[in-house]
Length: 153
Length: 204
Image 1 (cartoon, chains in turn orange, green):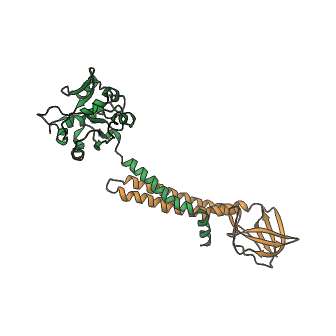
Image 2 (cartoon, chains in turn blue, cyan; image 1 turned 180 degrees about the horizontal axis):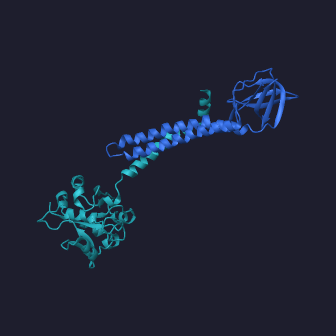
Image 3 (cartoon, one colour; image 1 turned 60 degrees about the horizontal axis):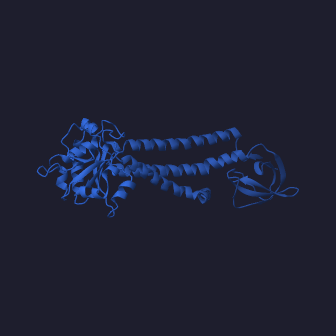
């Protein structure tokens, strides 16, 4: 059985990221529209609460955009850029999979130790959906030390 | 949840900075927005004493819309305090943001008006105002100010709020945008500051 880190072809994955980006910019445009409407509505009587409405729009919209960019779009884009062409193959037994993730090149990864001719550490994206267990015999497709695809032998 | 926690570990300061920046930005924008247009505001700096500034401001605010041909949003008499003997330094160093500067006659003893205030071009002023019965403050044949009380028999609106015995003189600011463009600033059709001055000179 063979599985890629992206779980789908590159172009489909890129399309998926673009859809997320459309949502990001839609929320941004909605915020701007909201500000325009609030400012057009401004009178000396409602000045006080319109000031807070504008601030609330910024805060809620801004927090969402920060979360969405940082937790959704950026990791996906980083994963896509890391999963280029397979540069090398590595056949061996999974020796150890770290329980905790670490950030490598902006991607949260598990460090995986593979026992081939000698022990080697490669990185598996935490977002990939691939589960590796110790003792499994695998053929790994590697690109820049990231696992791009896994074939269970 | 774990992903969010890790994201917050690296980016918590952005979530904190955003509300602070937003509050700062919108407060600045709203205060700039609420500030009346300088062409629709007449400010007078009053350097003397014995003045019921609060009462005068109240009266001016109530009548702001009818005083001038310009729809004024704010008319303000701003009392200025200064250390004794420092008036000249104050006038030389303080940035002038008002349209008119009002002083008591005795205050002019410590400074020369011709060095502190611009000359009022009489012809241009009379052409714009069309009123010649004003009591001018004149130095060496040149007009520098206008007395604010025409006569004791006919107390002016200004006199109704002024409790002193000395005469007060209004000087023009060369930076005013509301003085018919006498000093090259503002619209030549905007004489709101002059309208306010004439209003104060009228009989109460």
